[in-house]
Image (tube, rainbow, N blue to C red; front, side, top):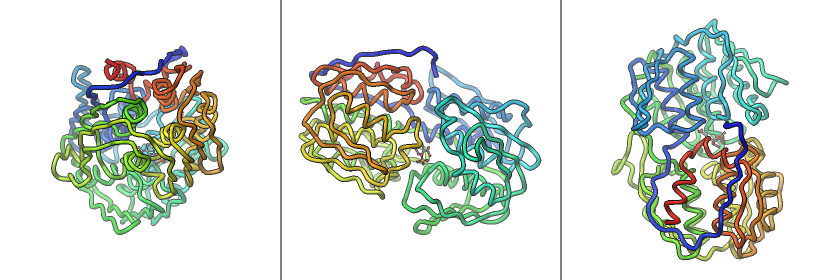
Length: 439
Ligand code: S3P
C-alpha cells in the first residue's frame, strides 16, 4: 500500500447520473494469474485488474517461475506458466502485500511441490489474518505448515506428496474451498470439499474450463487430480463488489439514475443486489438466467440500471452472508438511511477481513451520526433516515475507505475519509468514476 496517508473530502451530492464500467473482478483476476501460472500453455487474460492486490499476485507467480507480460494500455496480461509441479525454488519470502485471496489460494498449489518450501508474508493487515483455516486441511493432506503462533503469517509451506481428503469447511469460505481444491489437483485421487452454504464459485468454473473434472452434488464439490491445466484465453468481467459502491451511491442519493455496465452477474456474487431490492432500492437489468447468453469467459455478465428509492430495514440471514460478504459494510450504510432496523447475522467472518469489519464499520458509521450496534456475528442498525457526516478512518481497508466516500455523497454535511489511498487495493479509478457520475 502507498506509504502516505491521503485525506479526501466527499461533499453531499445533488444527484448522480451516467454510466460507469466497474474495474475488473479482483477474485477472478487473482485466479486467472494463479491458474495461468499452473497451466501448461500460455494464457491470455483480457481486462486483468491492475490494482495493488492483483499486481501482488502477478509478482508472486513471477517469483515462482511464470513469465508474465502486461500491456498496461489494454490491461491484457499473458502468463506463461511453470506447469502444475515445477515451481521455482526460492530463498526469499513471497510478499502477498494486502491480498488475503493470494495468501489463502497460493498455498494450495505450493503444498504439492514435493521437497520445496515457500514462506509467505505481507503487510500489517495480512499479519493479523488467520491462516490456520488453510493449514488444517493442507496438513491433513500431508503438507507441513509452520505459522507464527500456529495461525498467522509469516508462514512456511513445506511441499509434499499429497493425499486426497474429504474436508468439511467449518465456515463458508471461497478462499479455503479454493485452497483445498487446488491442492486436490496435485493430490492422489479425488478431493472433496463440503461447504456449509454456497460461496463464490469462480474457482470451480475456471478449473472446469481448464479441463479438470469438477463435480458438484449439493454442498459437495469434488475435483480429480490432473497432469496439467489447459486454459483457454480468459476475459475478466467487472467486479460486482466494486460495482456495489456505485449501486449504493445511486440508491442513496435522491434523484439519481445510473447505469453500471459489464458487471459480473454470477449468482454467488449478487447477494447484495437481492438485499438492496428487498430494502426498496432499484436495481434492474441483471440477467441471472443469462448464463450462456452474454457469458464472458467462464462468467456471466450484465448491465444494471440503478435508481434511488425509499429504503426499509431488512434482516440478512447467515446463508445469505457468503453471497454478499464484501458488501455487508454497504448494507450497514443503507441501513442508516432506511426506515426501521437492519440486522446482519452469521457474519463473524467480517472480523478477519482487511480490518475487523464489524468494529470498523460500526464505529466508523457511528462517528458519522449513525446508530449501530456490534454483535458477536454482525450488527444491528437503527435507521435514522440519514447521516450527518464527519470524519472516518479507512484503517488501511479499501472497502472502508470507499464506504466513507459513499457515505459522504449521501450525508448532510459531507465526509472526510482519512486513508483514502487504501482504495488502490481494488479500485484505483474509484475517485474518477465517482466524479464522472457527479457530472
Ligand atoms: C474471496 C472470498 C471471500 C472474500 C474475499 C475474496 C475470494 O473471502 O471476502 O474478498 O476471492 O475467494 P472468504 O471466502 O474467505 O470469506
